[in-house]
Image 1 (cartoon, rainbow over the protein chains, first blue to last red):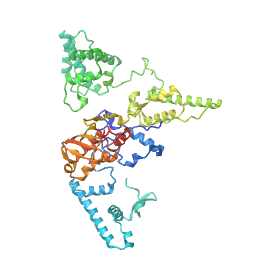
Image 2: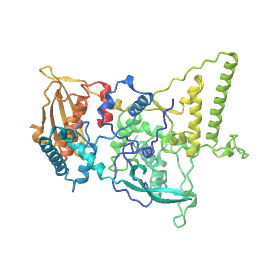
Image 3: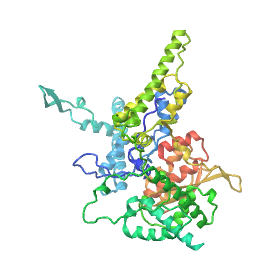
Image 4: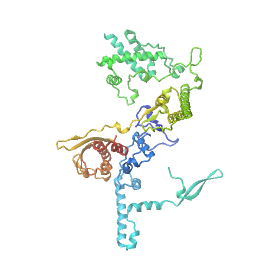
Length: 181
Length: 371
């Protein structure tokens, strides 16, 4: 009986639940990217495994969440997302950041060419190496890419520490800072 | 018979104008014309509001206060509405006894076609209860003494409701204590209601009580109701709690799934339509196939040279593990390449609904919104 109160904030005026009125989130800041979806729309879940789990194995919270999702309206999945196993969110993000002027075709082709080039180089090394070295050579370009990104992260970062009623920015490890929301 | 009809027509039109915004009718020209028409009508019960010329130079302070409508005024409006409804039915040549609100809406859109974008600015004819905001009757008697004992709290309906709910909680707890004393108390676990209903939201509660509430008031009220519903209640208390719950629709039920159709060879097929931005697509999915997709008579590999678009076409099949099992023939027009791919994806997903179980329909909806 603990159904949560459903907040139908902006759809109440009778305009319809989908259309949103303009609303400033923060004072002094102008919204640049707009979404036609209202706040009640939930993000889609594209993971196939989430749905294939048999009902008997679900915990109570998961069953509750599933039932709740049946009553919620959901946004359409974007054109870049599929349930494919070959899709990598980090690669997609990187491709989007590489893209200029909306030329996704070029950005994606460059990305695939890069990954292919990495794979070819690794295979050349693999075939030229001895048996012991072959075990150490990584040939999957995706793992190399992820490791490269991790290597590019800083080691230390500034963290606000409270001392004597004041916040001082002090150096600490990169992991100890609060995750970026 | 023409004269009364004309005046009643004027009355109907006057009623319509009144329906939009009551303050509009305060313009002089409108009132004079309506008043002139009204004076000839004898059969209709028409309200004649006395109109005094407004002082246009000074700010009309009285008009700035919220207009309050007396009970008699509302009653007269309701009578007028019912009579106007019957006249409208006669005008449209339909039976006045079985003239519903939808018929009224249709008649009004036919008689007064409007191209205004703002739907609320268009001519409407609805029951006065829906138009005039709900107001409270005078809360005190002739001697100035208020009727309700909680009048001086400011939110009498809210506090009396809280009082009632808390009284019920105490009553149930008392009953439980009595049962425990007798030894007849049994710890029955309360059956958890699956998601099928929700509590009233603050706006709905305000509308019900005709009072402004704060967020804290609303939260307090919901907490009290949850406490009451957690205790073992009998039918009267359940009914009390039920008054503050609203049903929640299961979203996938809104989309009707068509049954499978069969062609001459006996093979099952299904059609679906999809839209995305300005692209429109219609897809025919055949039951048995080899994964061939034909778009506007062209193979999908030639029509969509970009990998991303072909992945979008494959998406519904891949999700349902039916990749090489269906044949698709579709037509698409409008939009760019990405929106055409999205439109075909939606059309294919809708067509596939006929082949799969309801659970899978719900999963697809949660995953790619085929509604």
